[in-house]
Length: 262
Image 1 (cartoon, one colour):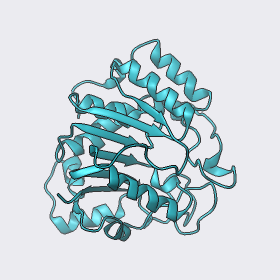
Image 2: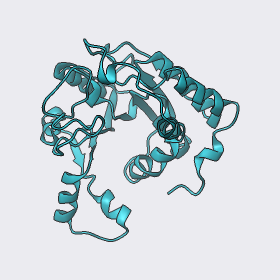
Image 3: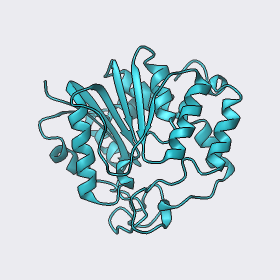
């Protein structure tokens, strides 16, 4: 866990400006390419818990994803794909202060909010707006680490998901890493919407997750690092490998960390 809560680092007036951006619509349209403007393809209602969670998202990522990544990677150049309002991007900047980081997202309001968040934490991160499913505006093999958290499940068509994953692989240097998070579809209710069997009965405007066994086919030849050990770390006690794997299968989220062949 970080020694200091990053909430105290989110300086004014940026913190207030950021919250105003969320209230005006930033970070509230998760599905950007749906043919129907329903479900997660239109602005959700802002509740106090949502606003607070979005404001404090840097703490969440810094104490979870970033603590895990520190065990495996030492990146110089990082790309955060589907960065939203910049919670993970800023957490990565605080975790890897010597690295250069860029973020990109299809929601222009989220990109603007991410820039405000970065300014509030005193970190320099270029954020780019890109059109949905338009590819990545970067050359080949530029980044040591490419992150894409809670993004894949909000892309409507499988073929567009495959195109994005191919782009992630393209911009990663040999020996570099791709890190993904997405809900676990083994569970009966879809993680974001709470729809029963929502990962299997697909509906426009609503998320659905990739199957755990699909990532080997999507990253052929890449070395996958087991993420099951994070559960033992959280519990603070050693657990046997088979038990860790069973716990990972039942967890609400999948974490995928793969390394590109040299």
